[in-house]
Length: 277
Image (cartoon, rainbow, N blue to C red):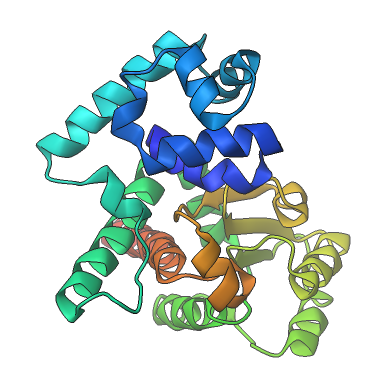
């Protein structure tokens, strides 16, 4: 995951002072590389120690290392034709149709790239093995994510896998109660705090089923319940929260679709391999 995308994804979980720093960096990432830690602190209206803590939270030894990493990241993005500032801009009423198309392309492309870059290969292999060996697969999604879950179940059925994707929350909980140790329950959601999803997950876990979550990297109750997870990365903004329920966005939809398509392609590859043996 790029540093800028990581900051955008964890911003809502940060302390008030850290959120000020994050907002300033996201608004003017190119300007940050020319500032000292004291200057950045003054512009963000926070203490200089907050800058050091912020960079350490991101895994850097201090502000100089963080600044160098941002500088390198901006250079890479410029080399491949990406405008980092464009990724922060949301579609507005004043945009032309061409501008909307360009912003949409940036949002979806960034979500796909960031999501695939964040994949741990061994973790992915473990999840694929769980799907292959599962007797039954329950796919859980709510709202817009339910569409992704249904599409994924249809694809799995073509491989001869017993995949179930009901949209009604009561039906999902009832199905979860019938699962066992040889089954898996896979959640597709961006918001890991959805109460119906948590009830479904608890029901399945009590029966010994393995929980897999395709969700945001935020520390949520669902992520803590799941034994395995894959990150869906999409930059959030206040516009998403205000106009689209459950933090849904076209970008998060693209990230979810990317992971389910990847799992399907990997399972198809495995199926063809065993057929040839």
